[in-house]
Image (cartoon, rainbow, N blue to C red; front, side, top):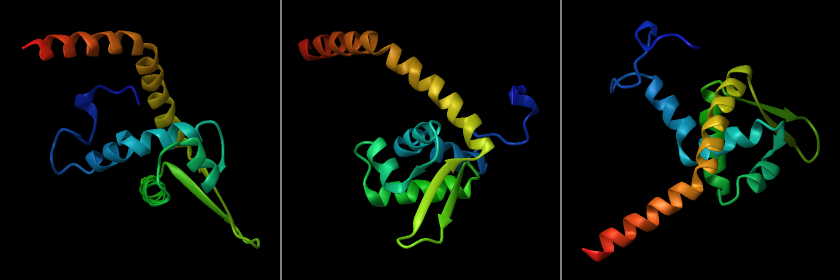
Length: 128
């Protein structure tokens, strides 16, 4: 996956490229958090919903469907009563989630600087 951008068959910067929709699913608010949560291991729907604090049932369901369709998440339904459904990352999903987690850790590690920059920005803009 460390190919040069020029060597790739798809171009996310092109409006009609199908990779753009996948990038939106992965980097959207709930997609990235869902992938990150599943990196820790298989989770049931409600476990995942608790882990991704703030996501509604509807949004989590839509997010999981999109990620499953993109081949990043595998849904395993167990024929039990009540039904048990587990979600886990595919090999591709693990690769993508690993890269996302590196970005998440970078952002979390820079939050002191970000908060300082925000305060400085707000002071400057508020003074105008």
